[in-house]
Amino acid sequence: MPSNESDKIIWKPAKTGECTSKSAFQYLNNLSRLQLLQQGPRSASEGNLQILKRVWRCKRISPVIKTFIWRLIRRAIATGARANNLTDKIDQNCALCGALENDVHLFFHCDFARAVWFSAKTPIISSTLLQEQDGVQQCLTQIIDNRTSDEILIQITAYLWFIWKARNDLRFRKRSWSVLQVYLAVDAYIHAFNKVQLKEKSLNIQSKRTSDDDLYDQQRSLSILP
Image (cartoon, rainbow, N blue to C red):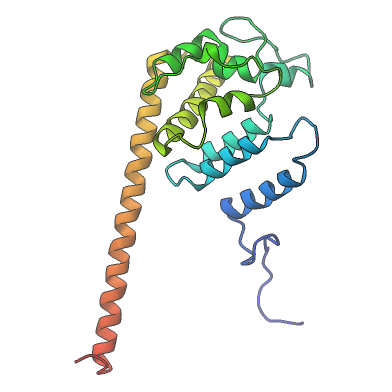
């Protein structure tokens, strides 16, 4: 039907037409469910889909880390081994120890990763985790289950993210991180994100109070209230 309103781009999967991180995740998650029974490089186990649900529901995990965890579970992280399959210009070996850099080595079995997990606030002996051939899905279900608290979930996802950042700094910028730097980065991230969440909550409460006061004044002006 002809209209004088300006055209605008809409996101069809969302009822409102607005593309948000939540609607995009729901759309992609629904697609992944359709592929759940298929064997392939991007398939995910039911246990890992449950982890994704928990990560996405947790408001104290940043959208960047949520997206990273989604890519990690879907085996979409450009490790040396995976990227080397596409071009031989990328070294398939770990920049720290020279071993084949697949997902499980990078995040759990490299000496650097082992030291990071062992020094975490909730220590993990990552050398006891499985040696997966592709991805870290089984390792994640070993350290995250229904009994894992949100606090531990936040820590684990943050450590995974900063191990990835440390690896990229070393490989592409020749900047080495210490285990202590990773520990402090995780601690600072959690503290800063919690602070932002508390500030937003405080602003929402203040905004609600202001709205309630405005409504009260309007009702009084209309003589609805005594």
